[in-house]
Image (cartoon, rainbow, N blue to C red; front, side, top):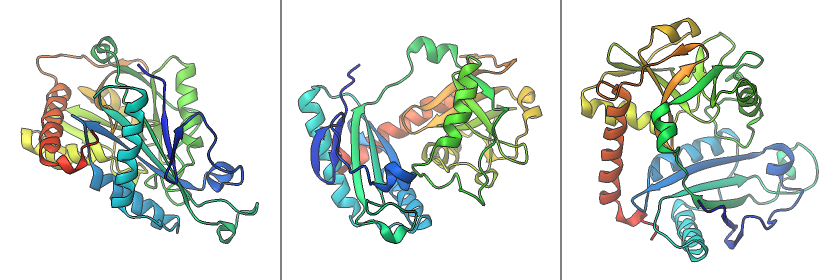
Length: 305
């Protein structure tokens, strides 16, 4: 897998290893930034409108102006992918990250000190778990030292450049040998993993924590609840989930834009059976793949090659 990452800073194409923003940039100094991540399926950007709408919601929540249109950014993404493929030939699916900062200016927290917002687009190969890892499932561990930051303080529904809460929770789980973490909110409810939403299967139905628990409204999660699960006739709903419910679940999986659905084999001492013949998770994953294939065929305007 290539380690080359292509960057596009305010329209200038360059290797991501090359510095491109001022040390006074507020995204660097204060985490005063928002971002979105897309991936392609079959060479077509997936969930373009859904991610863009969430970017606009995050910008509005941070009172951050977006001085560019979605059409402009789509054009800049395509330029960056073309340049990436000039360095790394191929037609495989790519990871696309758009980061928008409030800009630079004098040192100080006052947002009035910021100049014009900056954008940076990053392109790299979209990496997936190995077949062996996917079949084995991910191991998760509950965070014990930290809780999800409260919605009233810094709402996890805003996709901002401030990820210290997630980083510290993930570090704790990794030190225990887990692949990912399960984070609780201040009320002790399950929220999500560090970079993924979480869902469970019980009695054939999909259950996932509500946005009100303090989670990011994931695009993959939304598509699963609203489109993929109903098309397969699988009940799916939001539900308050507590740590003591973990052992009462039949299956567990993570959801993310870059890897869609990934089975979970364990949460601390509780293990889930990964039964290929009856797995609701794998049925949903196949349904999601079918949805992504149909989306790619219906949106050639979002093709990057």
